[in-house]
Image (cartoon, rainbow, N blue to C red; front, side, top):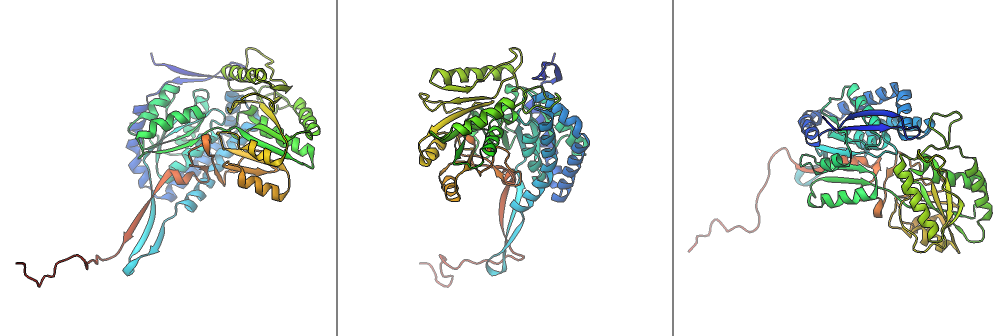
Length: 475
């Protein structure tokens, strides 16, 4: 009997979906067989096929959002924004491909031409995360399909139903089944797919631990493209903010949207020591008003549960460790229901924590750090191995210029949350947050490779140096 993956609702424990575990090698064979025909189509043909996909998602928008909300636990309003992002990705990716990988002709010597074109890699594996189970893998899949690649997509074992519906929409739009393959499974199937000799690359969004394992695994395969979009320990610096209510709203949005399960979520709030009291009061007042409830509740909650009980247990363990090291809770990380992964938004002062762990706490926990001056704030912002997002709230234009120049991150904002990066711009990080292959608008860069050609209508060549004189006889 085949093994099965069962998906349940974090909010209720009810079963959402179940399916048989797939075989990575078999899915790669199918994608490989479909590659030549798909790659041979014109770019206009492939873009039009993806537009049909966008229309198919649009026709299922309500059903799709409901499924995402139930399977992830995120509020329905947030799930609807995710479905909208899936739809919008097609036109953004089409524009990006034409902008980033156009055919160019340059003048060469003696009337020749230099042509620059791009080719697809072949079969690309996509491993998706659970926090945005449609939008984030789709951000790899759509640009890769436009470029002419075929796909084997393994969704997170925590959100396979969303992955299955996404693939169903591609097929319903007339994109051949061999072009987008669904691999259902857990970590073993993910490792098997990454190790398949038949793939030409892997596009991954997920944890740093898994990303580092993939980086090591691909060390002996430099010919395969590897794009890693990993986590963060992002800083949010608030300095001389004039509107404290606006600053508090930005802090709460940055830290607690999606129950803190965003790679760009603010994990560290950095403030000027001795001047933070009024700001923290505004933040805690707002925290106390946040509704934490199941995704379809009325009124709609600000945030739902984290993805599962294991994640909730791990976050509680990390919280306890911070307190044991000297952290002072301002708002506690409470677990209202022991059998469900609901957590309340938490805020803890870790200024005096000994050997503060540089880890991504993937949940609704914000760490407060007090510093004496702006120079120390920048130093603290950079006090991490990660480098995904950073934001400054308040300050002057000159301070933001200094912040932008000195902070090491792939997304740097001013008077905006750390999360919610625009899809029409590149997205990625440095350090442990990625491997310098930004996605979003720049995904076209890793979905195709450039080919340079020197071309002439007629062959004209001669060797002018290094030849013996034909009129001289050898002795």
